[in-house]
Image (cartoon, rainbow, N blue to C red; front, top):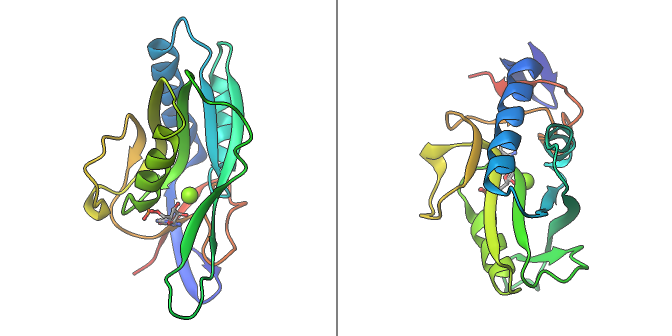
Length: 176
Ligand code: IMP
Ligand code: MG
């Protein structure tokens, strides 16, 4: 058991299982994009580890770029607004695969999908290492899912609890 801030976490998914899931996602994508050079887009901060390992298992020509959804405070009377930053490339006619660490409610993925669709991409796919089906509120299809997990908070392998835990090589789950 480990402690991060005020909470306790127990080991949940080993690095071996993570590697297996990521390798199989990479193979699926490889088979779906045989004659193309896909552009992978990792969503920071959480996806940095999964993108790194995914790329090592992807053995065909490809490109990689990163974006970030930045939330900035609106005025006191408006809600938080999320904006996409870091996209500096023409996506017209490209096959784009967004790589996420985790899809929870799906709000982030819905927003990303809307933004990328407006950029004239040829194909847009979503790949996520983790998916919480019981928390998902969208009807958008997730094209590549590594591991389906229960609706409980996890940390490690890029995912944080209030800033900490991203450097853990394995996944820990919140202890009840
Ligand atoms: P969404 O609800 O699908 O939009 O996910 C929003 C974001 O919440 C994700 O990109 C993660 O940064 C974060 N998140 C959701 N579930 C977890 C979790 O179990 N651990 C750490 N972060 C999470
Ligand atoms: Mg994320």
